[in-house]
Structure formats: structure tokens, C-alpha cells
Length: 416
Image 1 (cartoon, rainbow, N blue to C red):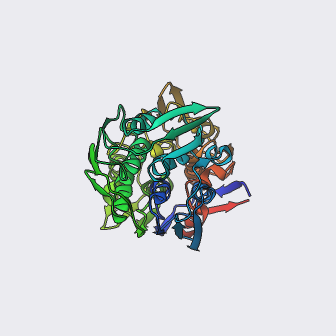
Image 2: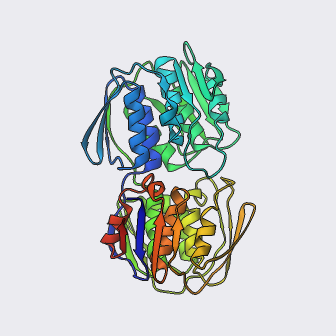
Image 3: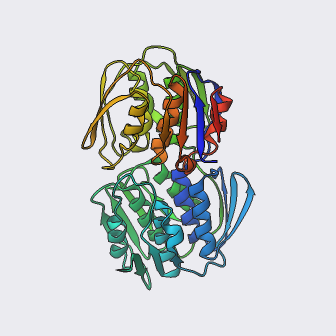
């Protein structure tokens, strides 16, 4: 079953709950390696990427117990391996996040260069720079990164770019380092805050998460904990855009509205009525969509993970929109597929000019990566006629049972 078939033109209506965040779950799962005990994680999303991360932890010697579909117990007491094989690392970009915890806990780690979606270069030099500053010795051989350290020590580290992954990896390594570590120009994404909160629940000493300067005071050991993963703000944004694209009325629950402001601000600018509650956002669609310009930036800017879904929405808005992608250089692969459906989009470098059309038309298209797949689902829901999306395994990497949530809202979508 590797295809979605969508009969478009039906407004989405109803209420749907967001699951736990993929981008928070992966670093938290990796950092559970720092505990010498059991860790119970709640609201773990049932995603392909999460499954791969759990397999990596198992290979490293952890016992993984699935309590139910959204709860996992990680028992790290028998952690005894430090090598992440290529067969797993090559499937998941987030595999790099085990480097910091393994280096801190075991003093050594070997990992194949990580894989993931082909959306552009995502170098690991900032991770390596941070580990080296903490006292690790880094070498590369045969496509692998090898890091060793008898004992990590605190350091002052300035990141050339506020990389989320590097911030998370360095912070995870520093919690067991001797002395104080300060990360400057750190990423301020909500998922970084969630990881810091998780680490503190195990006994880490971290301050400043959510700002561009994070201070970590090393401790000798961390204990077990129970922790609930934050809601997925990208899933929330995708559902909101789908509602707007179909002219529907949808309430998205189990979210943190303040983390969705970059998205909701653009929707309001597009003439989409929105109501926000304590943990809900409601879309009241049906009006004419107005074109807006979008530029992706690190948080609190517009998220790069929402660029493709937003491009799909802008393709049916009135006027001309300019979308600028500043994070990844190869993140417009969805454009050719949207054009198959009647979209008018021209790409030049990292910019896409979108001239809104009256309607999209169903077609056979291919999901080239995770967020591109989400864009095609949105386009299919809004289009006239039937859309068939192949290679939906990409979508399953980041959206848990997306078709079921959309069916709950009245969408005619099925997995074939």
C-alpha cells in the first residue's frame, strides 16, 4: 500500500487532534540514552522515522517496550554498543542525534553519515565543532564519523548558524560534561525547549533554552523519568492549511497556539478567518484566498517544513506570491508535481513565483519527500477530480495516519 487516492473538492469540517511532535520525539528518544534507568515517553507519534530511531536504540543495547501505540519505555541499563550501522543511519537524518548522548555516556561513538529526505545539504560540521570544543577527538573513515573522549569538559561554543540539530546534540553531550557549557547563537525552536525540559526532568541543569544563549552545568549522572512529548506544530499547520485550501471549517486541538503564530499570521494575511483558544485553533474557510509572500527562516520565522504545504495553498490564491526558501537549497521538488495539477509556479534558485489559478485538477503525482507529499495531499483535497499520490512512504515518515485524520474531517481519501 504505497498510494493515496483522493477525490477532491470536499470542504473539511470537524475537529481533529494533533499527535506528538516528530521533531521533538527523535532528539528526546536519542537523549534517553543518557539515563542509566528506564524512561517512559508519552505521546510518541507512530511514525516510520520514530520506528527507525527505536531500532537504533535497540541495536545499541536498549530494551524498548511499547506500552501502547503512543507510549514507549526505553530501558538503557544495558546500553553496551556505540556503533550505529549504516543500514539504519542511512535511513534517518535524526540518527546523528545519538552522537552526543553516546559520547557523554560511553565516551565513544561511531556512526555512518546519516540519510533522510533529499531536500538539500545538511552538514554535520557544527555538531563536530561542538563535540571537539567539549574535548572529543573526531575522525572520519569510510563514510563514518568516529568520536572519542575520556571525559567531556565544559566549553563556550558559538554556532555559525542556529542549527536545531547541532544545538540539541551539543546540549545532550554537555549535560554530563565536567563544568559549564555555554552555547551561543543557539536554535530557539520549541523542540529545543522540549528537549531541555526532558533533560531537566532527568536531573540535568539547563537554563536559557528558547533563547539564543543556553547554559548547561554538567552533572555526574541522570536518572529515569516520565515525559510527555509536545504537540506537533508542523502537523497542526498542515491540517490548518488543508482546511483553508478546501474552504472548510476545522478545529485543531491538542496544540500550543503560540508556536503556530508564524503560520496563523500568514493565514490571516491570506484572508482566512481564525479563532484561537487555549489549546485549539479554528479555521473558518470559504472566503477568497489572497496571495502573500513567504520567506522561510529559523523560529520564530516561517518554518521551512511548512513551505511546501503553503506553496500548495498559494497556488489557488488570488494574485502573485513569492516564496523564498532560505534553509534548504533543494526544497522545491513538489513544484513540478503541483504544476501537473494545473498550478502556475516558476522557480529560480531559492525563489518560487506562484500565480494563483482558479482551481487545481486531479492528476497522478509522486511524493518526492515528506513535506512535498503533504503539499500534494493538500492540493488533491482542493482539486477537481481524482488525485493519485505515489511513494507515500515519505508522508508516513512524518504524519501518523494522516488519511484517517482527514477522513475524520470528511475527506474522500484512501490508501491503496
